[in-house]
Length: 430
Image 1: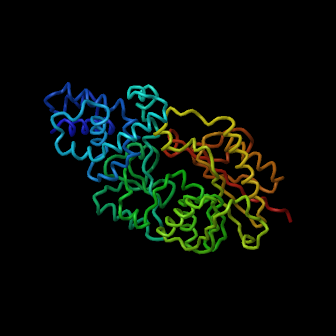
Image 2: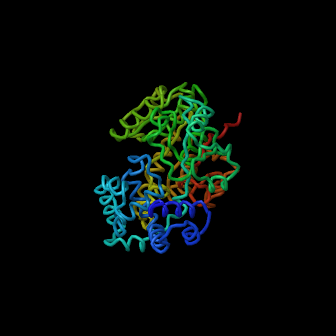
Image 3: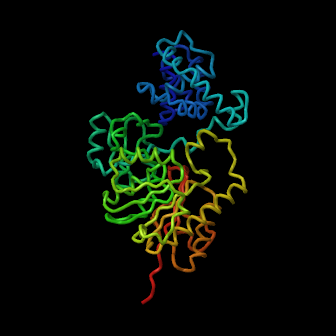
């Protein structure tokens, strides 16, 4: 076994908890133990940096036969190490096809973290992948085009080992290799090991699968519009939640989807077409300019509001910018002001019965504070509905009903960072 293959094997063994790096190196049978151990240790030290560069450069998508641990070792050698030792064989020529892009992504990473030397990337926090890098790959089966059972059978025929329905987070934490699970909560959600790349998979390209984090699936699931409903998706692009709504509605009814960005809306149209969505009407419009008294929306009983936010809970941002501090107070105030205006505007639609407010933020200012203010301004017309009582992480205790809200983060739920609140109209006493 060559040096790079041996190092990749040791790293895979460490990640799957087969032993320590030193123990696995000495058990590998590799002749130059000192050389192998040094390469493994240095690759581990820069692990998060390498993950970010590889992901940004799209290396694993371009080279489908290149496994993640081997890619990490090779990119370390190319960008941070001593160059390819012993010639590097076919890996040398393969990596050098991507050398310019990889170097450019490393340079961008240094700029984002405000450092000039490779060593400073480690000091800035780049060596610890943390919980964010362990979030599994969640894949929603698009029931407009296929069935969960058919997707499971397809992966099994491809050599994946199906482990059944997950019983808890521990099942997700130990997931590795070509194994996958059915999520314990969402019946159309498949779970693969972290870093599983399915962008080139034929089921994804045909719209049968949607690559969507579990937390991002909660808003549509909790809104739960039945077939035939009239629904507003207020800030709809890029469209994953919209396609989820259409699947829950079985393409029966009407979804009015708004976004003010023409390019994002065009990309969303492509996504929805690939997903087979036919019940959605797209509009290039700021939701705040949509009149609740417009006749077209008089039957709207369900609204999904996922407004622009700081994105402080996004896993990709945590991986690529681990040293980045929290959003500024001024930015949070501006975002929260917009979010509150959008939420109060949505609650003004006359037939509205249920609304889901969600963000991919971890900041109280954009979450509990906005929800509390909207409840106060609704003058008792709406209340918070209890949402998924078994969900482990609840809203911050900033007001009495906050425990009805949901929070998500890599550490406690193995998902991206997210917040969800469900509003229901109070019944008028007869």
